[in-house]
Length: 330
Length: 178
Image 1 (tube, helix red, strand yellow):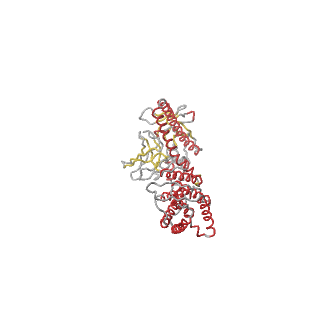
Image 2 (tube, chains in turn purple, blue; image 1 turned 90 degrees about the vertical axis):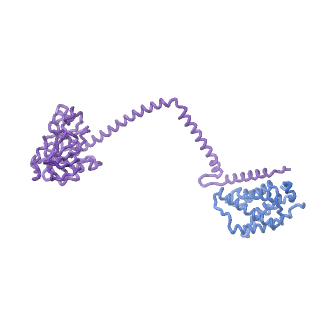
Image 3 (tube, chains in turn orange, red; image 1 turned 135 degrees about the vertical axis):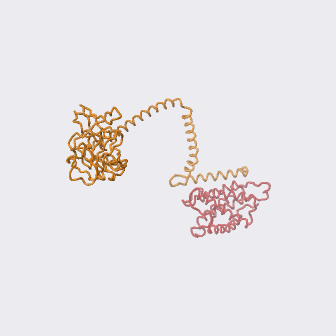
């Protein structure tokens, strides 16, 4: 004889029986991607606790590691700072080497493109001892074939000329020196005028008539008249133009970065030269503004019938209404 | 299963708990499941009948013991599951008829369910409960779309209720005289 169950007992029995059958159902049913429904439920029921437990243990572990177990942190921190300093230094050295490699690559490209032109790569080893003059010293001298009045350039533009040649060293007068200069012309208008130094970072274009139109940003290139630099090498970019008496007052930003010279090219000949125009700008990625040579190439008209390298000095006739310009090379 | 349990409280002591002849329930179930499987094979429209549900309701109302009612309902439902096709998982009808057996026993312990009108109404009610549980199971557990109510289901509820009234009279003959 079974004892009389209470209503609550029957309710519990109902719940238990339904639960048993639900579990049977869940065991039989398969979800397409997740296997049996019972497994889905089990995982779904257990995973929140596992996740919570994981977070909890992780939090306790983090708290312990980051707030309590700090006995080695100071030493580690000091070591890491030291390593960081070393790595920073290495990065700086590598960046410097990359920059040097890029510069040398440009020089090499320039030299390879101008194989018919005798030239010599040189490293700048010093500058003038006083602030009144703008000269540099290079590590090439008479033993390397360097002589006075040889031109010194970079792929960006002209630098100056050799004024003293020693056994293994030479002194170069920059075009920005008060005594420096070069025969030049404006790339667009082809107006010729010598460019001279002012003792300051900017150059001066000296004998351009007030009637001539000169635009700011216009490029000046070598004219070849000074017999030191080949024609069409970048000299600088017009940065300021004002009317003057009797000539325009024109200032140019040198094309070459004369304040940070590290490697230069010495043109080891005293004979007039003619460079290949299409290879003056070795770096194709540079823009025309960045690369005056490329801009000159784009802006220059067809080459004149008489090659500047073979042209005699003084054969180039200035405009009749222009004042006569003195010799550029002093 | 044929023992009688006195479940009534003092307030419900006037409601009679019916006893059945030995083996009456088993015999009834055998006949019912035979008919449930046999009749639709030749008379498709009779598939609308849910004889196991009617038997569950009847014995639940008569025995008036929630525990035995739900256990009997569970047994009938599981048998129906096992006799159904492969698309019916074991336990689908078992759960529904467990709940129906429990509710029928609980209601039978409180109300006089001998009147045909009461039986008709209760059969419709339990048919709806049964259908509701099936819908829940299919939607939640099986992830199958299942409508809660259609005209066909309404007609089925009415037909089952009418059949139930007559079936319950037949089943009354299996009772032991009080």
